[in-house]
Picture 1 (cartoon, one colour):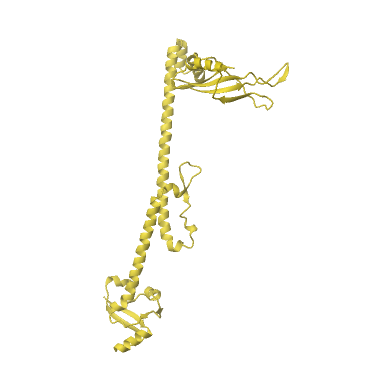
Picture 2 (picture 1 turned 180 degrees about the vertical axis):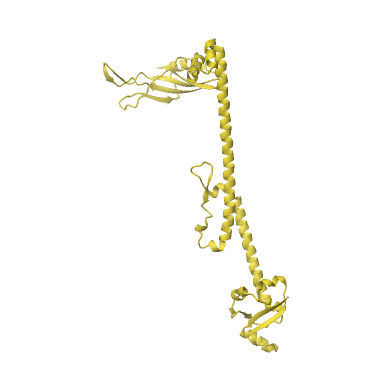
Length: 326
């Protein structure tokens, strides 16, 4: 296709034209055939004619009056006239390719980072990430927004996707954990119901069993009966009070040692405990504060050792405090 290039000769270019016997006027045109790749350099007139594109005229170095003022030698063909345009287009294409590669490398670098490093943890949802990132907000880079707006936008989209995928994964894991917890609690509750029903069948009279079958027995009282019966091999439950009166010297504190008599009492108890039982020892001076006919008294009782026991019975874990003496 035919096209026209407008060009301007420099003073050196005019000298070159005169030496070569060519037209030496400063402003000249040259016509010739161009390919489809060169169309980007041209405007199209209403009549369909091609002339050097306004964009290229106005943005090429040393442009004056719409002419390219960059020729120190007279171009003898349209290819020579278009050479500066093509060189510039090549440079711009290389720059764009390098920027694209850099942008892609940055995106891949962000993609390789653990998503937890890119976002602020949500303080109200453990394991979740907040919607806003600390690193990629466009408003943080007002002077770079125009140049790197596309990069910021792509990075935002990428990281938001990463955040959403992370949050969805955490949500799914939390839902699975919650469901597993509910299933375990339901299984434990069913095991307790089955144990209670079997215990009632084996240890109570017909009237109690009938009352249980009609769901008319108090569950808490029934479980307390089971605890008393199943822990009957232990000494009686030892109860004591520790007050918060600053004048009173009562206390209980955990200990890891026992004296000889206390240890002897503990060995007898320990021998009767089923597997899975746990214990903690405390030294106790129980509160004996009283307000009676003799007046108000605040004094601690005798110091003794006690064992806080947790004893498994079927699906239940019953507790009892036993005295080990002084």
